Image 1 (cartoon, rainbow over the protein chains, first blue to last red):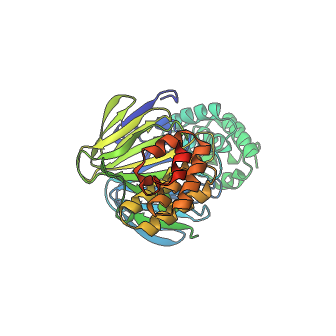
Image 2: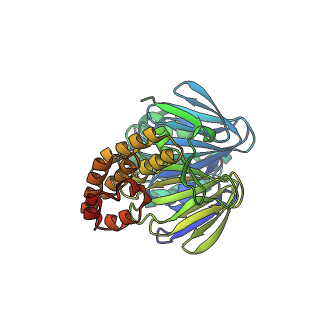
Image 3: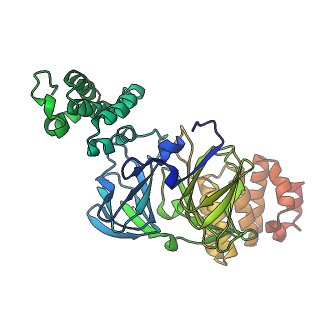
Length: 208
Length: 215
């Protein structure tokens, strides 16, 4: 897909998922707003618990299929198919759990008053299913490519370091962790306890 | 303003924006007061109804993503026909013409939009679409109030003046209608030609000032 194309269409089943995530914005290369679809079975967290304090996005969720239970700011919200949940306040913690098989939730987000820029978590999120399945070599490949394209993103460098640490590639892991903490010093806190970094934590060069 | 809000599709208003073609607008952004991106839904009551107006986004340069939430539609995009069963996304660049007709009763399409590289601004069509729909539904006070609200956000926009003039004329508020119409024509000469053929001005057509404004 390129932005010079006049239009593109695809059925949701034809867009490659990454675990529960169906990367809609990435698929179409949308530049004006964030949009993703999350699909899971009963009990799955289809919207992982998070807030939007770093990006300050307003978020609109729409339950496309199935039935979900949202928790927003501590309130439980029953959300059958056809329900919209709009979260204006970026500080509110929110998540959604599927109550039926094949539950899917569309999420749209952007920051009011600012031009949209694609979120850096997307680049990392492609690799998350590989971490879950233990395919660290594939996770490393995806993250190395993302890091090459977006060297300014601390989160991507951090996740690349995690994959390399899992693979026992100590030198590379330490170097990427150093870059990550330089870009995003608050990641140091996570690095102290992150299981993925266990193999390099005792190394004297481990950055803090 | 509360931090979050919920609604179901059924809770959203059903506003007839083009009764001739059956286009039924379900305002999502307006309902929630979303400020960061555009979001709307359209529902077809029966097969053959229009679910996406035939248009381009050449003026406000919005990228638009359509999602068929239920039913089935046929899109016409850039002259191509695209079969779009439930679950289909269609992403359209601003200058491309697009529209869709429902193949099944109850087809609902979600539309998300925004301009790449620029902060989102609420489209001026929303207020006038809503106001004319309320007028058709007989809620005339709300129609006038909604139109005034839209006009007050953009008092220098010729289209906002024109639409407000239409609404004022429908309400028999002759002097104000003519004043807004004059401002619309000042802003864009094409408004004069539009007004000459616009039934909304029936109540003021016999006024000599109308002739002076529209030529």
